[in-house]
Image 1 (cartoon, rainbow, N blue to C red):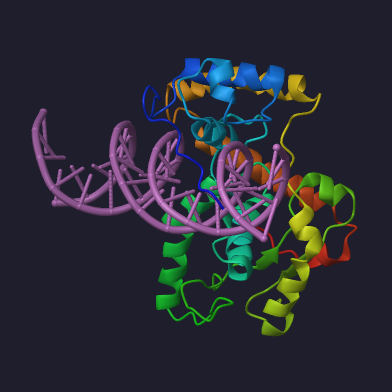
Image 2 (image 1 turned 90 degrees about the vertical axis):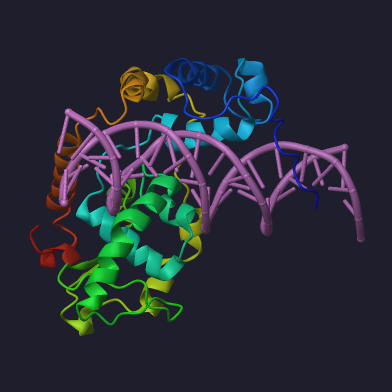
Length: 250
DNA sequence: AACATGGTCAACCGCTAGTTA
DNA sequence: ATAACTAGCGGTTGACCATGT
């Protein structure tokens, strides 16, 4: 298997993307899609390698990217899935619509891992599936495993387990979780927008570019509240699902 | 006010898997 | 079957920012 020749360093720009570059990339993908990342920058007139373009698109410019703080539910989902999947960030990301593998990886290393280690030092004894002890459930928070896209919920195909970690009889075993992460899991991929929906989705790009030009300028607390509202709406609208009757209040 | 330290996150690097000729 | 190539993944880095001293 031949190794891909690294993109020519000569003449290739590196470092942070400018709003102008973002706009060029967005416009190009909007018009022509991204069937060939390697050829894309040349055709689009960008002095970036294809890899860089792809990363920029996937991690930041995609219209379906969800920005802002992770909700406690999302964090718990990451923790649970990490127990099953390990550092397979893309697989975890596939279960968190709008979140990228890079983002999840960052959150894990900056927040969740430390929190879990701290909890463990306070007496936690959970192990991950490999027997190592760098991951554990939060002691007090409910344990949840979601398939999180609203579409999935609306299709009533949701597999959901909600239990209280203090009651071990109700807690999902590794086998249960593994069963949850079956073949259908791997086939579920967050769609990337080569579709005709582009025009609709592209509406938010202008604001995104503005945001990019002033890093961290978005209002995290507002986004956080929106997320909480999303989950609240989701839960309240799914009361028909029997399992939801035991959901603790947040 | 100035500096040090730590946290966050976008971007890069190197590798592997998958595809094609 | 093999080599050439691309896409995608996970680990790591470094710049920026916030907070503490």
